[in-house]
Length: 476
Image 1 (cartoon, rainbow, N blue to C red):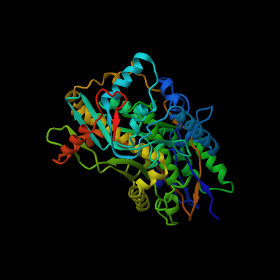
Image 2: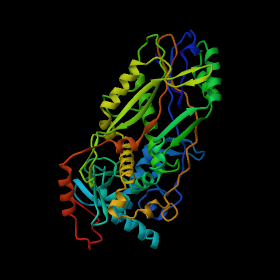
Image 3: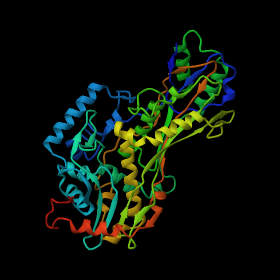
Image 4: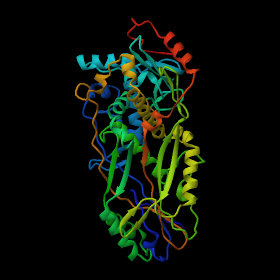
């Protein structure tokens, strides 16, 4: 009969430290992150259940208890969240247009709405907060004559799914959020050096203590739970780091929540909802190999198409890759990628990579991650190619943190260790997983000239409503 255990967090260990144990234990590490509610822009976000009220503290179906410990929201809590958000959207309807393959949204008029908010304090509408119902951005059109930049992509009506996620009613994919766009635009210059990423790691002290414990541990013993609780105590709290974006932003929450979900799926703590993506644990056999994989997600894009004048841009070929390497824990501490590869870990990563879009349909946080990456690429294009200057569009109100304050969430800094796992064979296996990273500047720099895209810009600008119709700031 199999026994199930997992150690939550982010851990790597040397095969040499395991000795010839008489039992084989797979110890899986799953990240947990603590955060709390928003502090500013509450009138807008709370109006529709985002930010200070219901919203972004529940990214990825995660909440916290009074001690700041991360946990999954209970089904009843998700039902309550969904119902409250539906009521709020009914009072202040979000975009109610039909599904569109290429909705156009005026960045100039978004700026105008933000300026009015700063001047009057009148809450931004759901249409503005959810960027006109866009679920992704596939095109940018620069309009120097109209002093505008047009964001375009598939869009639809805002709706609330059973878990409380704000989605496109037709596709089920989460809508883009103004909050994430503003964070991306403000952070993009600082992200040049190291990209945008999150990571969860045990402390060096905890690793040394755990290594000594594993050397002394010959069997699981008659009471496996006692051994696992000892591991939790020995390893201790683990560090959470976020780079490239403010740790207190919703954007950062999406990165960490996606990492959290990936780990839970990989370690068999919850089903992916996609039959082609089983847990990593379920794929392991009772061989003598000791495996210590680390899993992380990276994005890639096809070259971004542009017209000769660099006034029209098309972003396509977006893919998310799951990658793995084996880390080593030796006398000098953790050495990333120094252990031999794990074919099972590679196979699991390949299945996640191949079926990521299906997974994003089932688990909205993975689609939210794609949304944030798209917005970072858009920010890199606008800033790097100075498209705002070419358009004569002043974005200062969006970039000014004092004039337009965003919700600020408690920064995740540490996580507890929780043990679980699965017993197979006669030796111990220690596995690790974690991480999300991408470099938007790399994608924005990879462009190619395409003559056909200019016609798309011409058509988009020609279909724009009368400039005097201030309420028509998006169109299909």
